[in-house]
Image 1: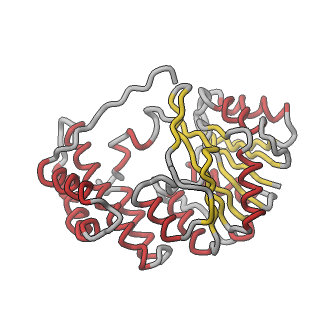
Image 2: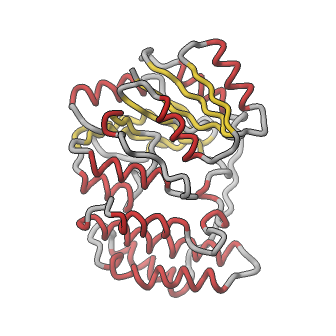
Amino acid sequence: MVSIIVPVYNAEKYLSSCIESILNQTYLDFELFLINDGSSDSSGEICDFYAKKDERIKVIHNENHGVSYTRNNGLQLAKGEYITFCDADDQYKKDYIMKMLNAVLDSNADLVICNYSYLRGISEKPICNRNTGEIDKNEVYQRIFIDNTIGGFVWNKLFKKSLLNGLNFDEHMQICEDTYFLCSYLKKANKIYYLGESLYLYRLHLDNTIFNIQNMFDINGNLKYAIVYEKMLADGIIDKIYAQYVKANECVLAISVKCDYLNSEKNIDKNLIKKLNTIIKYNLSSLLTCKQYSLKKKIICIGNTLLNLRRFKKIQYKNM
């Protein structure tokens, strides 16, 4: 059996589409946890409606605690031999579970990762052009931290429950809690398999964290990404041979956030800029010596650092 965990928070606009995509799976032996994290819209009622239609659905209503608490709640309740996740505004393709499960059984992998597509309106765009097959950790870390074609999220991945013992999402992290969790699991995983077919649809809209510049900083003005990345390295969940990827990405993110912040805010907080400059300073050498970044990318990053060449674009999505 496969356990599917869906954190739900004020997702009424897309929640039904998400649930329907799961109920329409070609593989039937699953349990679906819809965990309502104190939604103030009709999300809770939508969850209850579907629970009455299908006995495989379990609904849990909580006060608002955040996505990490919600996912941990699901992990505690899950009875399946395999665990997978879905965000409440996203969708599975109809054979997501079947193909992910077949891959893990055929390859005896500890983790299966599938390609995914950005969903914008009715169109979709696959992200990664890698072929199906076994994938080593070096490439996995590159595709998490360098080109983001696999991503540090948990929703396009199938986990073995037996390897999840002792692992939880850090409820104190405000961002990248899924990346920390995934890298902790990768520390345990020996064999990883990649499915090149796009089986997961990630919905792009302006509520996504990636479009919210202010959400990049905590209340003390620290870059949230940098806090998590440094904790990964300090806690030893990233092997030293992959540390350069993390530091290089930390630098690239700091440069991008700095440029976007300077171009999107009228009242600039100089302390924020100072902290971003410090991150860039201490990690720039990792970026410049990282072979996985092209010379063009490095030149662009240097140009953005010195001249703030990157321009923040306010993207508008229609017909979502």
